[in-house]
Each structure stands twice: as structure tokens, then as C-alpha cells.
Image (cartoon, rainbow, N blue to C red; front, side, top):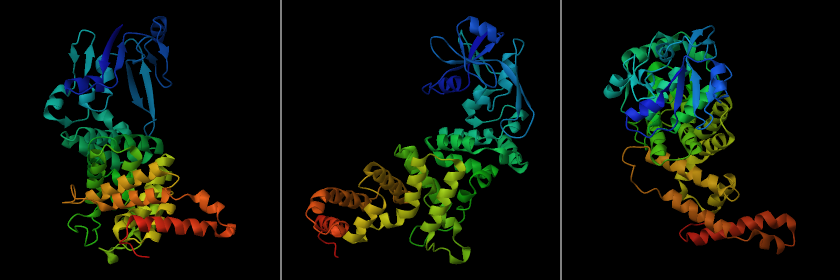
Length: 407
């Protein structure tokens, strides 16, 4: 029985990056051997165990055989006679197929160290094409390691997987898992670029794919189309270390522009309403968490109004705050402003320009929060008039905040 550290832990150490998790492969052992040493079984499809002290994962060396389409269509074989090289051969990328034994000796049968040095993401072998999730994983790794390029032959194989319909078998849970992880990387735009390059974006997120080539309104740097703008916006969110809901909202905020008929370009009248419908449909298909879905809907619906905050009358500002539930959900409203600021800065030349809308809306919210609605309700004899009286008091408070505003 011999154990090796494998995968990301070895890759990241060689790159000089912090090691997050350590996975191990065990050669020459049976499940009974592992249990006898106090390991706890956790694997359902193949033997995986948790170390009794470190709780790190130890998997028995295994091979796999394709039995059906999709990422679940595999039969696994784990036995003491499976070699380390056979186990590494089933992995996705050469940079993830390096092992390190207990003495620190590296085992690298597929040239992973050379590809790390050359900054290349290259598939290990033809078995890569059997698992469509690997298309998403390569795109996610491209977002994590933007200085790496995808090998020409790997990109060609990914295109073939798309053309052969293998990607059509991806299920929502796995798409969301890889998409959300990719959004949280340093350069999420690279994920979308790689998915576009191999044709997978049109399969898993056609609503986003349609944005490329759609012009922006004339006042929004028309030389940058909506898709290119989107790439800048999500990288702005990453640069700000924004939360996942903010990054997801930034990703989907302009979906409605993809539904504008070409005859109406570069105008996109009413795209916000179309965007809300599309965001809801995409979120339902991906089974996105409610906090991500709800913030993305708000961003799609309200980002244009929020950008115009300086021109809004006090009553309109109060209605916006009510419509976005800012009084009850100030934290979410702050996230909405963050997503909209990423939209503002996702255009050439605006990266460092002031964005006055945030300050205006924060002050308006503070003014509205200072209104004592309970006192107004208690002092209003006609209870039917209470909502109107509270609204009027809030409008007056916002007007005092900005004397230049007019009714």
C-alpha cells in the first residue's frame, strides 16, 4: 500500500500558490485495508475514505470505462492491481495529473510539469472527451489561471464534444457548480471566452452567447458590443472581490438586449422587461440559489434607472427604493448598487471615473430610513391615508437631502 498526493494540491504547490485541499490516491489497497487502518468510507460510486485524523480524502486507485452518454455514464474499477499511472490517465488535464509520493518525489507520466512551465491547459488523453463536465472545468481553470492558454488540440477536442452532442447531456446542477465557481475566479471573462471558442456557451447559456455582436446604444461606446461589455463587467466584479450574487447579477444584467430585433439596433427600448423574463428563465434552468436569482432580476430591471439617479425627482427615488425593497433589505440594495457600479465601470475609460448614482441613492435611503413611519401612522386619524402620508414624508426627506431636486 502506497499513498500519493494528487491533483490540485501538487499543481498549486508547483506554481507557488497556497494549497487549499489535499487529495490522495492509494495504490495497492482494498477497502478492507482502509477500514482496518481507521479510515471512514464516504464514496458512493467508488471507494473514497476520510483519514481518521486529518479528514483529508483518500481514494483507491481506479480506472473508468464509458458506458452511457453524459457525465454519469461511467463504470469504475478499483482494485489493488490498478497502477498509479492508470489512475492518473483518467484525469482531465496534464497539470492535474501529477502525483507526489510521501518522500516528495513527483510522478508525472503525462508532462504536466512542462505544461505548467509553458502555461498550457492540455488534456491528458482521448478519454477527456467522455465527460462533458470537463469542457466546463477547462473554462473554469482558464478563469483561475488567465495566463494559461488552452492547447490547440484540447480546444479542438472540446469543439468536437460540442458538435457530437456530448455537452447536451450536462445537467443543471453541474453547470451551476462550474459556472458559479468560475464566476468566483480572478478573471471570469476567460471562462466565457473559452466556452465561446469551443461553441459550448451557445449550448449551456445561449442567452449570453446571443449578446456577442449585439451593439451597445450610441452613447455607450458602440465600438464595444454587448458581449464584450459583459466580459468587462464581470471582471470588474471580480476585481472588487464581489460576492457570488453580485457577480451573477453582473453576468445577466443585460440579457434583454439579446432579445432586441436587429432592425432596432443600436437602440434597446424596453430591454429591461425582456431581461427580467430571461433572467428568471435562466435562473430556473440552472436552479440558481434564490439570492442570486433575486439580485439578478433586480439588476436587469433597475440598472438603467439607477444609472439615471442624478436626474430622478425625489418621488421617483422613493418609488425606486420601495420597488427594490431597500428599506427592508438594505444589504441586498447595497449589492444591487455594487452590481450596477460594475456595469458602469465595464466600459473603456470609465474604470476610475466617479459614479455619483451610488452616493445619491445611499443618501436617499438614509433619509427615508430616518422617517418615523410609526409616528406618522399614530398621528393619522384616517388609517386609509397612512400609506400616502408616509410616502409624502419620505419624499420630503429626500427633497431636503437634495435641495436642487424639484417636485
